[in-house]
Length: 251
Image (cartoon, rainbow, N blue to C red; front, top):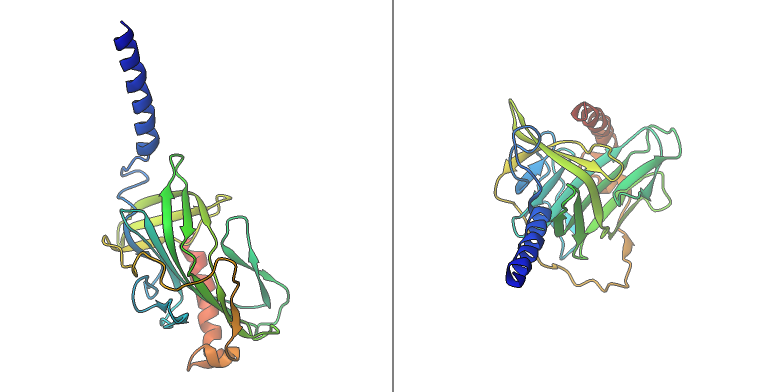
């Protein structure tokens, strides 16, 4: 009787543990497929993997259009590539409770276009409650270009833990699987479409030695020059279009 009782307790404990790990349900209603692979917004001009960033030298290859791309591997690694413009006002960088960068308007000058391009990778966890936690490896970085700021163009480390309240994957009738991520407060992130079921990622290890106590931030040039051969005026239309397009994605 004692052996039977102990066996029942052990099995019950095992059942609870298994449920905690496997209560994420994949079905056609909200998770039509797994999250593994590479995802990208809009025209899919921004992608993770080789060709977007060189973490060893902290440099970027600018894509033709703005966008965001996430990759998730089956063994628990992630990578994020971001390229954004914000216009119609001077903007300051603010780290929100979601640990995602936001831009807070501090003016109304339409010539002040803030550009941010960034790369980060690390390990992620699909939590039992449906949320996602992403912990960076420490070698992420971003370039901020703001012609209205005291320092118009600089590169700094970006290694913030990111938390998403939930995620959903739907089957889009024309573009296939579509990933929806929701910030800590439930606000939606621009949806991404699956580019590949195999994640396109740089090596899943630290790609640059960065002391944990060191904060790197360096000015590199004036913003109009760093924004590329199109110059500042060429970017204004792209910034407005990016904001308009992002709004449509969220509808």
